[in-house]
Length: 243
Image (cartoon, rainbow, N blue to C red):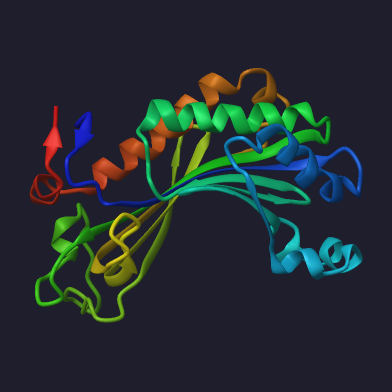
């Protein structure tokens, strides 16, 4: 694996922990406590639509259990906070060592609130887009072989979602050619091959709070290895690898 890409395809990087709170109303307290601890780096507080939904409805609807109610914003970085979830997002990836420091800072601040009873899972999600012309075939950029009724599928409307196990981790991979999004640095619309890698570990329990450094490193390594394993040599060359 290269140590650096001169043409990074990364659109957004996210880290998330889902937890059991110490009390049913912990979600009402968590945004204020985290803001107090992190306001230097994330000075802006943004209420999200879920914040206006009564707690009884949020607690009874499985689709709302892990939705964020508030966001703390600091430039291209943000922290999403919900009743049972905290997540870190950046659209200006600073490299792994700095991103790890940001993750550790968030986890330590969340732990310091005393509102996390047990961590149920944590995950890293990397959203990448390899720029490509709509007139060229994009699936051949991947280590992927797929046939539908005896022939390769059309890329128009193609979307693939698969899961794979890697030790204690599960990685969800989503692939979509001819995807379009805005580049976070230039805010210009770009299109190409979308690759999402979402690596998570379930049932981690309190081990995460006591031994998180090695678990964070392991989760990142699985996600990174999975992404680069997906690329063919020609795809990697497009990204300007540096050894």
